Length: 197
Image 1 (cartoon, rainbow, N blue to C red):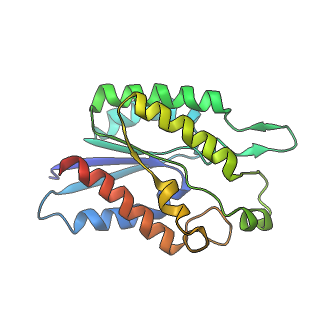
Image 2 (image 1 turned 180 degrees about the vertical axis):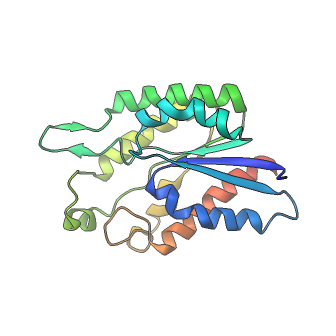
């Protein structure tokens, strides 16, 4: 039986780095044996996360939760003129989710900021919904304010990936490349491992 259980919640970005996170923990199993479970959100937005977070905690009983939502929230519907989840609602949803997590897990909560897009590639790829880095930064600022108010550890994936978005992002301008997946996995692992060391 594992010493610790980690629940990683996120969207397709999280799905892309999960295997490497598991490998990182497996390499340290002589120190702490960690079971990594996951829940990949279907829509990927904070509304969905708020709806399922309580049942996820009941089902998995984790010691640590590492979570992210943002890329789906910030997506702009140009024909209708709205973001999938407005900035104010995003902040409110994160507040509710974070308060619940902290009440259950104390300092065993890590939030990952939303990664940027490579705007020229994203536009050229012909995505139906619009995303731009200005909006992503606004949503990240709101998220940071919530996490700081609740004293939650922040994994700054936006910094990790923006170090060289030409290398870290795939041809669609939004998904992580192999290098980006490895960098993100390392950051996720280190942010969680640091709680115990």
